[in-house]
Amino acid sequence: MKTSQGRCLCGAVTITVPESCTHDVYVCHCGMCQKWGGGPLMAIESQHGVTIEGEEHIGFYRSSDWAERAFCRTCGTHLFYRLFEPEIYSLPAGLFSDGQKRLVSQIYIDNKPDYYDFVQQTPMVTEQDVIDLYKS
Figure 1 (cartoon, rainbow, N blue to C red):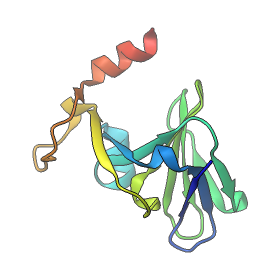
Figure 2 (cartoon, rainbow, N blue to C red):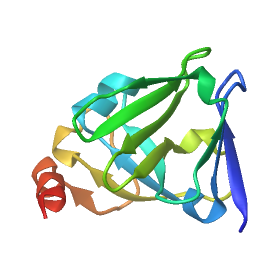
Figure 3 (cartoon, rainbow, N blue to C red):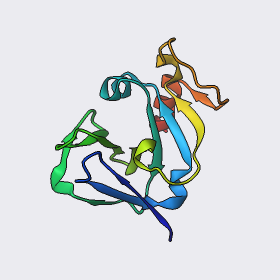
């Protein structure tokens, strides 16, 4: 299986994922993602095959009952948002510089501020739609 590696700014943490998951970029406009990164989270997703080197440099913040956020304690780079059940990693797309990427969907679209828009046409999912999806 081909893999892709992403690194934090200082190089203390390396994350390896299947190369096939690095093409589709998902955007989250929720309030937590906006506070965490100053704007939307533009992420790739991987449910399997995530390996992490340099875990001793990672800080964790449990941002909800169902997920946590991770960052490099040395340089502050945002590393991932991890959903606990099922375990899914959302990793900032910018960590992975190789390969073609395409924007495929936007969630929490009703929380998106008015001062930016993406030109790509994508499915747009509201906060209530996300809640309903995880309830089922």
